Length: 497
Image (cartoon, rainbow, N blue to C red):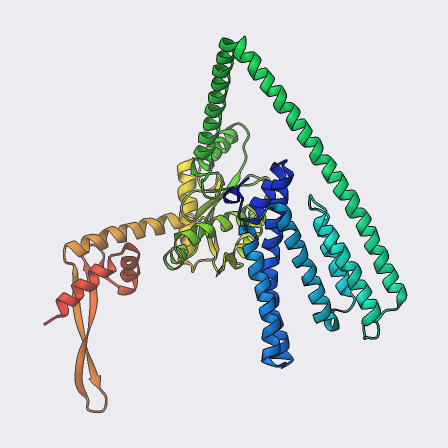
């Protein structure tokens, strides 16, 4: 495998190690992985050294920069090693030598802070080196660990971290134990890869023999087999495409929740079954409050991630026998089939609402949101799917009118309110086109001089059918309809001299 074809990410390197059976390639990949881990650690160590010795301990800047630059240069070396045109063996020796230098440097420089736990750090490095395909790094780290232990025992034993000879005997015993384990792991690893290589070579030879036989004797049969294999592959692909299309037809592509069609099919089935065995169920419409602001201020990518997180939270909040699906951009539908009363359903949905009000952490953003929930009951609030859905939707919009982030069960009085609102919207739109609006001017006085400083223009509506309609009643409706801008422009034109 050439350097240009080697993976660049840690996950890619690990996958490549698991796939390949070539020892040289594995060694090269292990070298890149070691550099990927060491480079950022050396860079962070450089910064920490500067902060510790200069900013906290107030050491001389020249002394601090010298050691910080040393760590920084080590970081650069680890970054550049994968690009060196050396073979894997030389790179392994170089990386192992640098790891040993780092352990020695840490021992000399930071013993006063870390004490004999440096040996444990060496043992960790040694344990990690055991997973490599070659023994080179094990030997380097092992020898370095041994000399570090001797250096601590002979030259640093009088320092505050001295723990007596029994401590070092135990550490050295651990060293030899780890050395033995490392040797055994390495032997097993080599044996395994040799066995894999042998099997691979045998399989390759057998494959080549079979290909020769087919080419000489069964050329026509081979063509038929190829056509048969191709036909099977095509059939499998067709089945896979069918499964994908079926899934897309019934599940939302963004959240992987049941989509509107699947929710409607489930409601139809429940209503059909209730005609045979009378039963009731609940349908709740859940609408995310102020979702448009999230899309407008943070972008559609964050908006999509928010919808996915909201779907996961809702799915984790419901009972295992309930069904939740996405029926629109920021709308979800919950079907509760369980045989429970309205009070229990309210407490259950209230738990969902409170849980949904907790902040969402989307990448580096924190989004605070809430949900307005409308609930309809079958057959009390509708005996067919159209009426049931309409009433659930009506109760959800009523929840938004009440200030959002609330639960609203459907009431029969809502139908009349909705009809009145629709009637008022129609008359308001007609009034704009038939010039039923007019202005009244209210004078504004200056109190100190008691002189008129201007007039305030007030919009009024005199409907032939409704009579004088209060602005408190028609202004909010105009805002919902998007008519308020046109009315404002009309007022400016009319009020201008």
